[in-house]
Amino acid sequence: MMSESWTAFPVGILIATVVSSIGLGGGIFWMPFFLIVMKLRPEVAVLTSLLIQAAGMGSGAIAFFRQKSVDHRLGLFLLVIAVPGITAGAHIAKKIEAAHIEVILGLIVMMTAFLFVSSNQKYDDMGNPRADIRTAYRYSWAVVLASVMSGMLSVSMSEWLIPIMRSKLSLRMSIAIGTCIFITFGTCVIGATVHLLTGGTANFSIVLYAVPGVIIGGQIGPRITKRINERLLKEIFIFILTLVGIHLIYNSY
Image 1 (cartoon, rainbow, N blue to C red):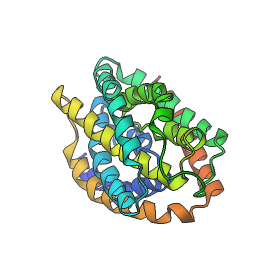
Image 2: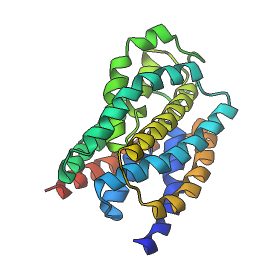
Image 3: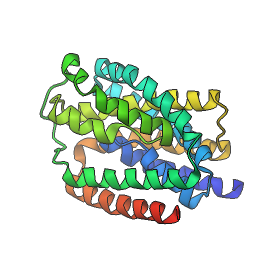
Image 4: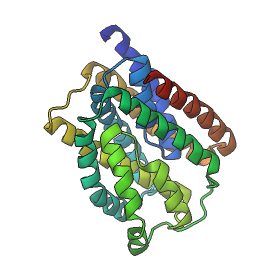
């Protein structure tokens, strides 16, 4: 495994560039990579993914803060709501069999692909620079549900939050993406802390190779956000996510 850990560096650049450019969380790609390619145990894969994402999303969050593209009030509000769900998800992860985790992850990956198909959100910058917190509170139930999945499988809440931020809170796309990157950073730090405190283990060899890659990618992604080809990007993601989801479900049997 040590000799293969270096592959996490180029993969980290690629994943962090893509996810930080459109507001996704890296866990949706890191977990399949660890389970299918690196053959890590699910519990090790989750904590390894969270530690790597904390570095990558922290890098991306800094870049978006510099661009003044983060609604920090909304981000902190949603993080507070997410803490109990993340904690619960981390404890649930320790009680689920590996095969079941792969099935659940596969279904989530395919659901994410479906969200890309059904989403009609444009990558323009029409909308408000800040959200109304009272309006955001109405959708806190979605944050709670998504935070459980985040703590359990290291997948981010961005896939569910960006459509809400755009259609219900009327945020600009760049602000929605930047805020979701900030939220993902916070959830990864919280999730990793909970897993470590409850005796979780990570593959630190992979982490050491991946962190420089995700830091680099986290700076590249925000620079291409406004130049993105939405249709091509969605087609690529839908194709990749569907294949990965099917493979995870098949691999669990």
